[in-house]
Length: 125
Image 1 (cartoon, rainbow, N blue to C red):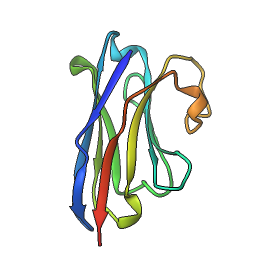
Image 2: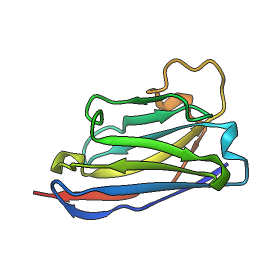
Image 3: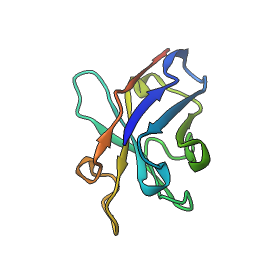
Image 4: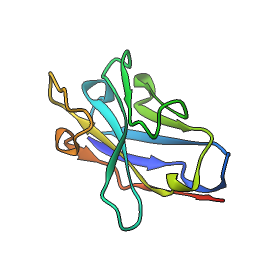
């Protein structure tokens, strides 16, 4: 599956952004999905995960209460709604798809098979 992330931009602290990840080549419902991010000089880290059906979601502590991951399988698209953005949220955000079953380490990048190209989010103070 090919993934295309979009929706990043430059915003002020406290603003909101919605990232989108459009899939092509395969039906998105075949994959669990995740969002990761990488800030300058730091390793890529887990942000959020959603199961194939969308029934379950998981978040990094830094994202809980502010970010919401969702999916529309009919549109082959996954979203990350980000509210109350902080300067420390500045990073390149990546969407990723995984095809395995019985995944427990949804926060582990190695569980994901396909990655999008990333979209830059910059939050100014």
